[in-house]
Image (cartoon, rainbow, N blue to C red; front, side, top):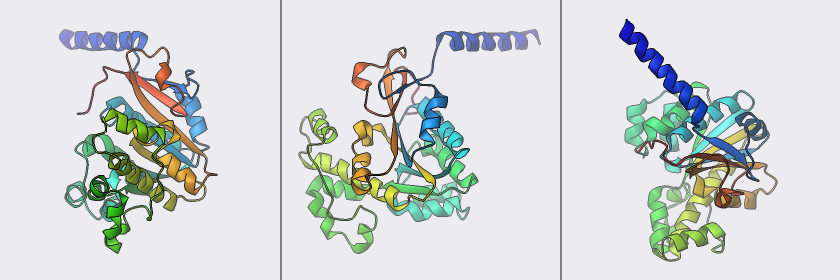
Length: 284
């Protein structure tokens, strides 16, 4: 019994020390000023579309995605959507949401990311429990590969069935958008001009399915890699091009070695930036 009490006291002391000296995350606004979770949430409630830009393997951010979803659901009717599910898997996803198939069947009929069970299933299950729509927004990866190999022209040869899972052709494209330019620079030119086009077909398709599933008086909450919505480009650019009057707010995630202030390079890339320690545990 004494040993058990010592373990409890030790655990509590560790928790207190962490609460006093450590921080799991810090939210900043667009100008780089610290922002409370409560204030961020209050502003998100007023949007038509919210993009939660994540780092795919960051455990605290996946937890925060779920908390933001739960809290927004208390204030607004939601439609959820994610990059991590591809449009041609919508039927299987719907069957899971409607309890017609179980997780094992979903796993065999849909292309799920390796970290789906730990990082995205909680979001899908929240939608299931609360009868919310969950939209698979991303382009089928096989079609993104076609663009990488052959450019947008390669999509013209797709069957009419396949074309249902991508944004309508022709795909608008601005090669001078800073995000696409930076992508080429980061890859040292590998992939040529088709590399950012393969990114653009993902952005355009996600924007298309978000727009297609917008509902009056409902907030569309979308989960995606931060690169797809940083600097209000990517999906945001395509969505605004189609519907410039939408009230869109973005969240991004960055890793820093300190959380006292937002580093200069991370300012202004989203409406809200969540900084997390660069030694945060990863899910893979």
